[in-house]
Image (cartoon, rainbow, N blue to C red; front, side, top):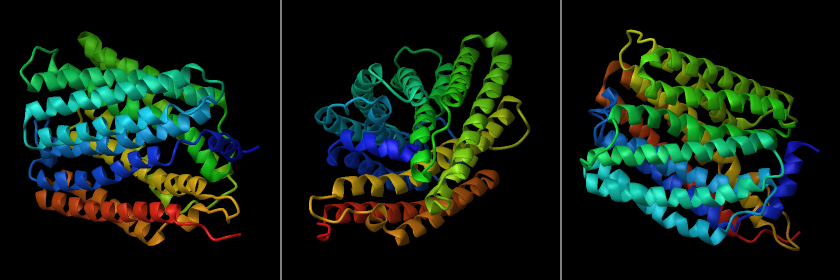
Length: 427
């Protein structure tokens, strides 16, 4: 049986009610649009990549928490039970924690944008509590895992990384409130690595071993290869954190972290490309072009990380690094996957007794996705050029293009929901 068949057999018996994952994905779609608006509001200062409170920082967290984090909560809750062969977590608690998480992200982003530390603190506490509740559900699910050891290992690593990220985030919030806290630079160094590469990165790598074979109709990569990539990636995270603790050996530890992380990424990408090459479905269309752009962003982010550690004399390296890491890798890959996940999940919920089964292609809107693809790629290109040239007008143009693309993606989401709820024709 192919990975696709195995997934379908497990997923159908472990489906959450449609309202649960779709509310998380819907919120991610909305925050995606507002992230571009926040970036436009901070266009004057974005190329310098400031760490101070302001709209660029709000835009960053609308992407990381509002889009990536929101999608991770929904996708993780739906997909990890398939990997662990355990019942799906309690849907009532999942549905309930959506409220404090969504409100928390909104208040936190507004606190950053308007430079209101009190708002930021309230939002950070709400987001932290929601994440901890979600982590408790995932912990219980992973504890009884009976399958897919590679995916499960990535799930455990993501949960550990999430605790590190939440602790570092609360510490950073404390510094803005003037409360006693560890060195901001040291905490920020851990947060900037363990949030994208740790929590989100481990989830993305692990769930890719389910999703890519499923959509390509291919066998999953071998468990030993998955675990090899996982072990190297985890070692890289530990080495990066150690560089903050042991300052005298910081340079050597960062080099080792980059070496192991680069090998882990190269192995993962080799497994993904081999899966696509061996899959029965050769043309996966525009959605997987976005996924491949995302994989290129992962490689580019590591290349820029090397340049930062070696202190190469190029301007705006930090800005370009953040753009490749968050915008090109994580955001592009997520949006590409969602173009497949949303119609697929909707089709599984749309079937009815005595009626013709829906297909994912019948629930999608290709025109909206075509507009989104063009606008998203243009936005990333314009932001890259804006960072190099230090040009605020290019930032505004990129943000405008991204907002139009986000609007098109939102229309695609609305169409999927509408067609899912519409009664299918009688067979």
